Length: 126
Image 1 (cartoon, rainbow, N blue to C red):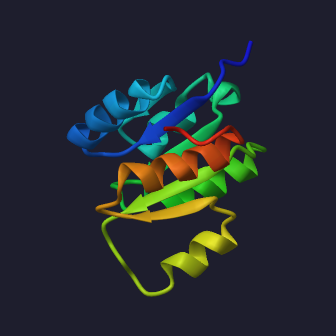
Image 2 (image 1 turned 90 degrees about the vertical axis):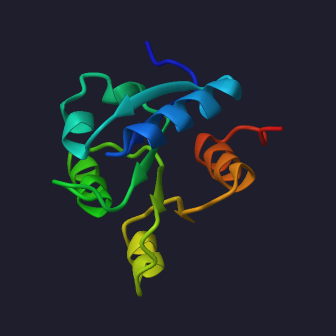
């Protein structure tokens, strides 16, 4: 059975995962945390994911590779990228990959929650 409003978070920085976990839960979202793209791909509950919030630059598979692999496996849930690396062409590459939103770190809680609400197709979080 699919859980409601599950946000999968992939970030290699444990402190970021911990902070996002607390923040997202404060908005009554269910959160699954993963330290790497590979850990998410090995997760048996991908069918329960409502949207994915992932870092772009990580050891192993990066966010773009993760997005491509998920699509190749047939997963269509919205993907939101977070990055501290503002590189030329990221916005265009993200759009081509079908990413729902690109958040440049540091970003506001309001911007992130707006992206998540759009991705989950739910009313805005307040």
